[in-house]
Every structure is written in C-alpha cells, then in structure tokens.
Image (cartoon, rainbow, N blue to C red):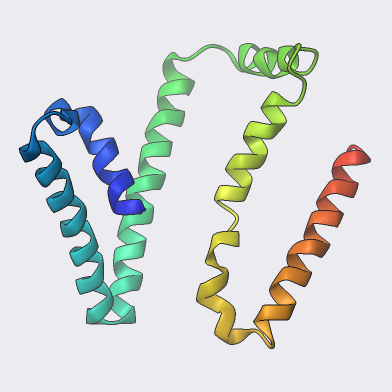
Length: 149
C-alpha cells in the first residue's frame, strides 16, 4: 500500500507518471513501487540497527517538513485568532462534527492501531485479547465523547 501511495504522491510532482493511457507510465509506476519495496526489504535484511537508523532519518524528514510548515505559518500566515476562528465556526456549522471527525481520522491513523500484528507475538492470546482491548477502548472513547471529554 505505501509504495503505491508513494508513487501516487510522486505522480503529483511528475505528471507523466499519472498518464494512464500508455503502458510505459504504468510500467514505470510499477517499477518505482517495486523499487521502494526492494529498498525497504534490503534495509530490513541489514538488521535492526539499520532499520532504526533509517527510521530516525525518515522521521527527521517528516518532522522537518512539519517544522518548515509551522515556521511558514508563523512568519507569513494569518494570526492565531484567525486559525481558532475557523475552528470556532466549524462547531455550529450545518455539518456538526466534521472537524472532530477529521481529527479522529488523523489520531487513529497515527495512533499505532495498525501495528497490532507487529506486537502480536508479545501478547498472551492475541486472538482473544486484541479484539477485547479494542472493544474496551471503543467503549471508553465513545463514553468520553458522549460526556464531552
């Protein structure tokens, strides 16, 4: 999934990759996705130290991008009040909860719930305990959301 997503993002910067009509661009997208997969596999085969180093490097790139965006917002963006004004206006909007729904998607996608299989060996009876833990977390989140926490 991630190599295909990477190539899709790359196609934004290189529109020739997005041309679906010719077979060459489809082959090139497939080749790039395969190269991303093989590169990740090669790093994993080198060992855990190299995986950790590459994760730190990748994290630095991602956080660096966010730092640049925050700096640009501070230097050239609207005032903080304008940003919070957008949030305030979303609450009474005809689509209540749209902002919260977007935030919940972002939190879920970055909370590590997709990594259950990575740690399944560390958990006693994962077939029973993971669904149980997710069910309990769902009840806790739903209750907290209902109570306005």
